[in-house]
Image (tube, rainbow, N blue to C red):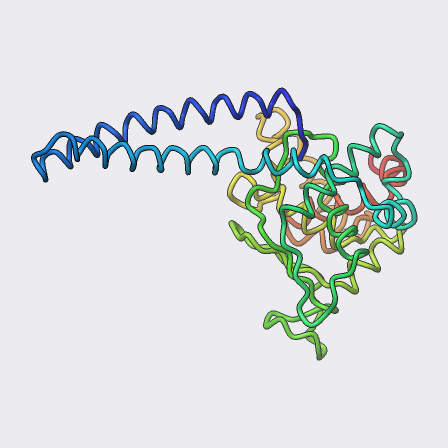
Length: 286
């Protein structure tokens, strides 16, 4: 989730060439079909030209929309209130140097401008936006080409919910939710705030659910993110997961017991642990 001027230029040139090829293809196919239908080459030519121009223009605008939007966002000063919230509420941000903080702020702006954050019977205030965006940016901050392309909206409930999205009753114990191939994430506002208030409990629903989204970029949430598809890394990761799950079940690990559910949940809780308390995780598990 980044912005590189050279990359933008390359994307615009590529999009222009693809749009030009589309224009030529649509023009000849449409012109030929129209000529067969009306038997007059001039009207067929003009109609085909208009259709092909409109089609290629729409394609070019669609292909470059994201990066043109980011170019506009970069011209907007980062709000002082957002900066204050990052400095006081997000410990990861405080550990960055000046250049990294500027990059982090930019990625926060991109995320908030591109994803819908909708409150369900609760207010989505500036703190809520910043914490959700930080939950998204932190796991991919060192991977500049990673994007949440398949995520369009985050629904925020006031507290934990059940499978029917009800926040009342003993069954309301779900803190967050994503699904395979789904474009919507659901978060508990209460759990989100709690996760950032306590950096020592190895629990952060934002990190957890965005870890699932990263995991699912290859089409399935299985605990094996695309970054580990290299065969050597894949085998090493499988061995580590199997070993740690056995330790959790035997009560010999400080990793959240929920991680023993399956490899997908292990990856998510390990991500929480790492970004909540990296020093402790390094000491215990490296």
